[in-house]
Length: 115
Length: 114
Image (cartoon, rainbow over all chains, first blue to last red; front, side, top):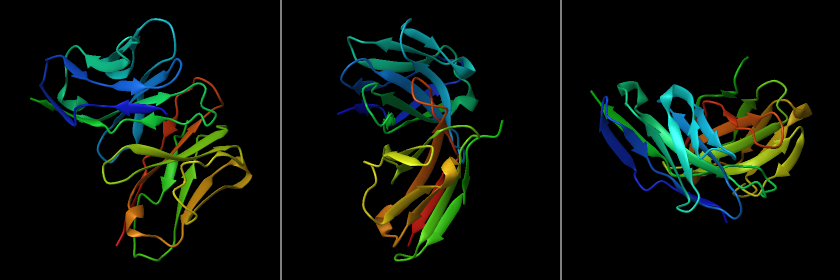
């Protein structure tokens, strides 16, 4: 069965500092990995995805993520955090062999960027 | 291009009542998904339509939940009768077709059962 873990409920970082939001996954085969962000009173917005190829994926708003197959991780990173990055971040996985094609989400990590 | 829309944005009902949630996917998207997030926990899959057909409903919690997708366009999710544990945020998502594509999510409907 597929699963996603986000080990930190909350991440606090000062504005201008680099940020990392951690994600590890468990899936048979090669995973498709995604990051979504939810701002207050808004739906989930797609940030980036890893399907195949380069392990470093660049996405929206200056975010990037690195796929590490040996560590089964897909951590989200940004070199310099902004206060406006404060939101709830979800990691998700799709198993390409999963007939249903649905996402399995992690529990979410709340990012607070302090001015 | 209009995004995924959901109605209502918030619904408060009493236990035992019926509620119907609506989702309008992005035009032309064959795939439509329902998810929910209960009590701040994981977002969990409920079911998946391809056009008007239910492709996978393995995540539906019980037979109090009924989903339909009329003519392969908008979808409704009915909860009848509602229970306290049904409270949460119900998300709808759509995607163009099978494969590698990300899903586009609506803003969600916050359901509160009292």
